[in-house]
Length: 367
Image (cartoon, rainbow, N blue to C red; front, top):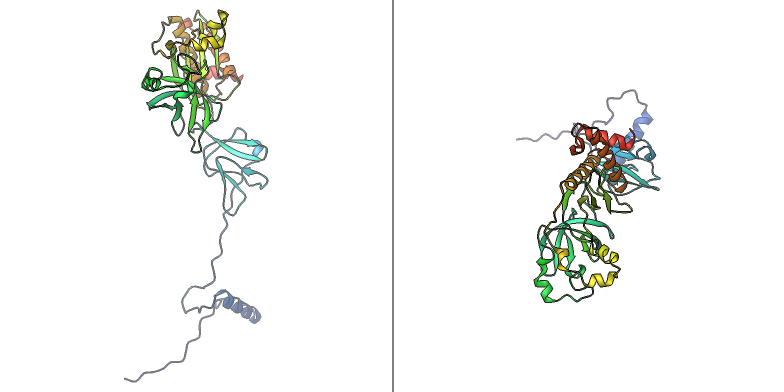
């Protein structure tokens, strides 16, 4: 069978549809096409081999950071596109832009030129010197594992507590065998963060006499330093206040990790030794095992009622987004007592949820 050889067919110009262009423009465009094609040949009916232009994404910038002090941002929301600001925790810089974008849902905080977002809900991040309230969840050979609301369990070594017989006494094997007589699973303790590990773990200690096992009260778990309304670091985290309506004295412990303890006030060995004229050193040496007792003392009904009222005040502060510290708790308690006096139930009205909680928050903020 004979073979017929056809002449080569010319390629179709890229801009063949535009007949109104000048010859010099066609020549320049063909040169650009040759340079952009990277040595390839355009086939008839094929798409042009020019690289596709990248489309830049434009971000909608928020107002200046000074207007975002009380604003709540969501993940992916642009805080600012001004290049003079630096990104902090809870933010990131979008690729090929100067926009600082939030990575968590929370409130914007500004420290000089540093912008960060404090999350509305987050795990507690320990810092050295923090006073925390925790629950013992595990007893090991020479230490306890304590839940403080962090990403990891904190460690309380046997060498970091006060033992009967004096703080300077060397820990022996007998102490290790009797480790559950000091703290057992489920016990609540108040301690201080002594050391931090690189992975975020914390080491606690209860060497001070104001730390140790908690008794005679009620435990409240609220938000802590994660952000939003909750317990904040303040000058005093532990104090004793006089309760109204014959409730006696009540102790309040505000853990920075968001755990709160409200209990009946019991005279500590430190106060008893001071009242008797003794020294603190002698008192520590004669420290008895009653400090680690798990038996609650008798609590009067009036005291229990005022403890419940204080708990309602703390919960109302958190539900309405207010900070929880000594000043706000004391003011809120006095306001709650006045609200109960005008109630038909009188002092026995301790409910502070719903509209009553909003009324309490409005009275504290002056709204």
